[in-house]
Image 1 (cartoon, one colour):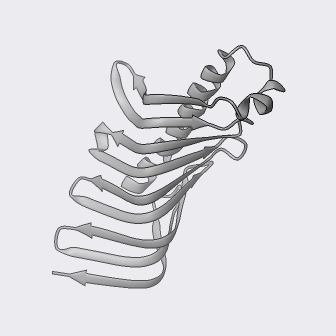
Image 2 (cartoon, rainbow, N blue to C red):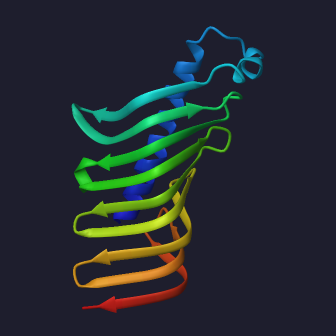
Length: 174
């Protein structure tokens, strides 16, 4: 249940970053063909980015990044020190790096990704969020909660609020 909400919120977050990046690029005054010529001399980026989704005066989710680097061709945005928060779920996800592919509408997170929500935590080294809110992790995944620890290699989380570890699953209950 928590994973599904996180998946949906993460995907929406990625779309918001895309919109922010497009707004920034449209304000540069350059034509589309000029981007490649200018790539060698300057870079487009945003610093201390904070994107909020607010409905009826209430924050649904928030994304922060210390820096968002926009590619010269406008196809992707690379993020540094990404934090995603969903206050209603008491959920926070932190990743050292992220990449939003604007053509595929996918968000890739990498580094030591730590997600915490309501007494549970998940750690992994890589995570991809694809359209429809599906989440995929190909590396080792560790889930922790009160009196339990579950490890596995690879993870899928779907729209039906399910989470599946692909292989090498080990559960420890205390």
